[in-house]
Length: 295
Image (cartoon, rainbow, N blue to C red; front, side):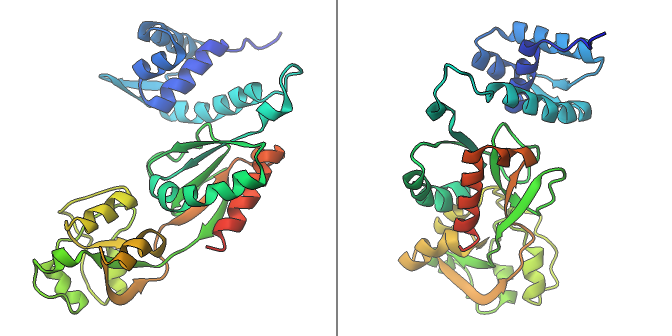
């Protein structure tokens, strides 16, 4: 006897709700009412005999089972969506979906993307953004660039490059505090915090036996952190590719020669193993490795 499969409309509702963490937003995307979407989720849960979401007021989060099932559903939906239909032109099927962190997208990806599109004008690129360190499940994208520790089980992971981390501040901010001539003088400064650039590894290199700061402005976007430095909110850790224009213009200055040569986080290219089976994805993966491993 054939195994009864869950309805496709319930699977698409589940994927959309998981992607948005919201039934209301998912319902709007699918052009149905929130109650209809809730019905589809209940239908799926009854079929599976498992909960896939935990409801918390207006927000929803995946259960552990839901997270594992989502990976399977996304592969299945992608396979159906990408099946070559005889009445569709090959031209329209050449599309690569890529997910990148905001700062990488702004400072490194967009300035280089024209090079790829010039070489391969037949391939359409769709760009999605996500917050580093938070969403560790591969989205509906074909390829992701992730900023993190590089530990992504069951996914093909390739390190793109590592940049040293160093300190910057605005000249205007430095005028408002006691002179900073040695790392120990940082006790007079406001240290801008980010989970993406923790301070403690740099403290060790600088010979400071200090714990990770637990107070002060915290920003979990490296580009926004650099903006906060530029506008005089304090001292921050950054990388050369992001800060070089501001350093050259004098809007921020580097503090000390001390730098962290091997920061805990770097940029990685991540994709599922079967992604390279599509020629356009394979071309994009080869281009991004060549472009950024030489950065």
